[in-house]
Image (tube, rainbow, N blue to C red):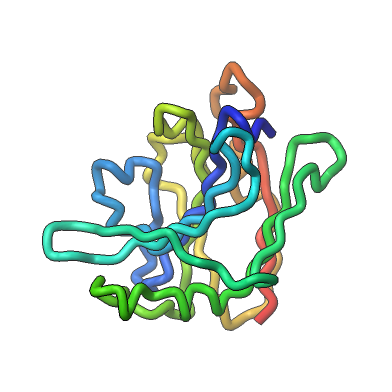
Length: 180
């Protein structure tokens, strides 16, 4: 992991529509994005930031969500090899984080079916890697029923995908655990 040069994003679509948040978000206007945890890339600051996306009349708006103390925990170097991190958060953050009261529209409340993707982003906001077979893969789909206990191992692992020049920018695996 290189938290200075890269941001690692875990992107969620919590609308229940079953559509995947793909790396081509600039082409799809972030329509399948509800929330994104962003880790790193801000001068080496590693603490996670939560961004929320919501519909507005001419597209999608976003806001940085103020996360209550203790609602998220980040463990860097989770595997002891400097190649992973562990992010644990309370799902209720997604329910209570609507920007209501700020004059912004309230987004769709989270539904039981979530779709998830991961991205690596460089300092120029270019997405370098994503779940599935990389940034151009629009066939990848990872859905999670949040009402069920589940553990999914290596949903993002890329079998046979091209290797990026910098291993710190490549998504090579992951684990998602849901404990309702």
